Every structure is written in structure tokens, then in C-alpha cells.
Image (cartoon, rainbow over all chains, first blue to last red):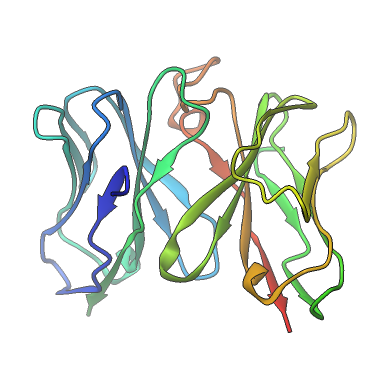
Length: 111
Length: 124
């Protein structure tokens, strides 16, 4: 079993829709949670960073962490065609040697 | 600079040839990481450095892969005798810390790892 599981999609939504992306994990030590966006043929760029449980909002993006369920989510409101990309969750913990990535969900927002 | 610079962008090698990839991390970032991204977006961790020192190389196939981060030089990842299965995009990332928490400043730009644009290696 992988430490971080993510539905690869693909996910297609119409412009303006609310998008929900999710990851589950098995290691209860994870305490730092990230969402990266990766456009085709580019490197991942950090979208959201959350420490421990709770919600974090930044513009149209909201990240949620539920440590009791080992479940994290990224919500995108009023989705735009420019949001079309692959979204990767990543997580870590103090003492870890690197980030643990999900496999990414490919999102397409249709105009 | 404020970006991780990777060169070359594309590299084509015949099976058995050597491949060398370069990465200039962000100044002030103590940690450098190499990841291999293959089909289905799987990110495989290869190696990490703390300054010039190898920190964790548990992901490296040591018989053919080697990496260095020398002072005042770009970091490098070298593959001797490439195989077809080495075809992938190799990403370099740098960070102020292993877990992505910033050591300096609270700007989001200081969190997480900053990735380069990758080197696409094709072995034919």
C-alpha cells in the first residue's frame, strides 16, 4: 500500500464549477500537507501549505486537513480553464527526509 | 536567483550512453532533492543533499546513478550506461528545510519545495 493515495482522474468540469480533489494517507506522523499544481511539461508549483488539521483559504482555493480520517482536500471555486493542470498532494513530517507525493489528479476545466 | 534552474530541458541518449543533468538551486536553500517522474505522474525520490553532503540516497539505483552538489557549482545527476527504463522527467527541487517549513520568512514562496522545470530524458 502506498503511503499517499490520490485518484488520478481524469476529472473534467465545466467552467465555474466547484472542484474537489482529495488524498488519503496511511502514516499518522504526517503533519505538513501541501498541494502542488503542475502544468504540462512544467515543474510542480506550490499552491497551498497547511500544518496539522484545519482549513486554509487563499482566493478561490481552500485546503482542508482531517487528520482523524487521514484525508486532505483541495477545493477550487469558480473554476477557470487556466486551472486545467495536474494537482499533486504532498506531505511530510518532522524528521522525514523528503516529501511524499500522491500520483496527481489531472483536471480539465471546459470553457 | 528565485528559481531552480535545470539544464538541459531535453536530453536524448542511446541505450548504454551516459547522461548528465544539472540543477542550480535557489540561493539560501540548504537542501536539494532529485525526483524522477515517470508515467502516471509518479514522483520517485532519488536523493537529497544538505549543502554539499548527501543526506539521503535511499532512492538511488547506485550501480548506475550518481549525484553531486559541489560548492560554487550546479548540482548534477549522472546516469552511466542508460537503460530504456531511465526515460523520464527528472526534477530538481530545493528547500530551506526537509519538511518544507521555512527557516526564513513566512512568505508562501519560502514554504514547500521549489521545483525546476525538469529535464526530459529519452533513452532510445
